[in-house]
Image (cartoon, rainbow, N blue to C red; front, side, top):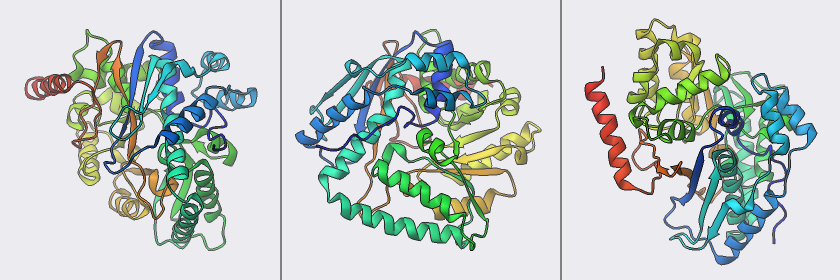
Length: 406
């Protein structure tokens, strides 16, 4: 039996609050189903692991926001008092979870309920699954030692300028080795910039983990995820799903105006996204986030798009967040830094870099208001959908639009 893993409801990605507020104000009646998937073919969860995961999720469901935590959220520029009041009353419901061993990997998790609730469960669930697995499947202390050794080398190369990343953030909570490891990584990266030999070519600006952002006085980072575009765009049967991005961007601007504006491009392919990301949205949103396919081609495509609209790309941020390490980020920064503002969200490489490969696990929306939803990423194989026929339908809609809607 392990110690409690999640200790605060702030221990989630910032974009859960970004989306949560907009869900609360505009889509509070939406209902969603979320499905866990382990993409590693050689990973198996034992019955003991599954029981511990259930226990940890029950402990998580016993948490509430404290007044101190709510005060912290309330001082964030774009968070509104009505949403803070909702969070004061909010609590996770264990009854929304169905957890069994009925899956090829030995672990099946689904959540059912309002989008307001189920959206908030994703990150805590994945963090719990990761930590239970690595503590019970391996010699955790040995893994932690290899993690510390690699972290020390990373920090040294950040301090001495081997890697010049510009602005970067930590995005690793969902695939972290443990809460202990993630906190240690953030502490060491903060300290790396305080040493006398730090050359200033990288700047650690924040973390998506709101709890640790609060603790270390960093910026909590995150705007929207694929679920936002999938549910807003596909959760209403009157919508043509090929226009999902338009519906999602429109609802976001209604909530935030020019604030909190980094748009995710690849929910139904970046090319389709650009059909809707025209002058108004390209002006209002401060930047765009890359999460699949070749980052160089994507960056060049976004810069060309801004230029075509008469927008100076140097006023916009290209946020890269797909499977990054410091070397990849260093090279991307060198390539794009004189063409646009560049930033990086780096997850597993910071929060779970050990001698053992990290888990490739996700928890994605599979139904919204009783209807299938899906993403068609710029990378094949990144989607999760229960109904292959719906994926084919969505692809046909996208193809028709790309060929006929000019």
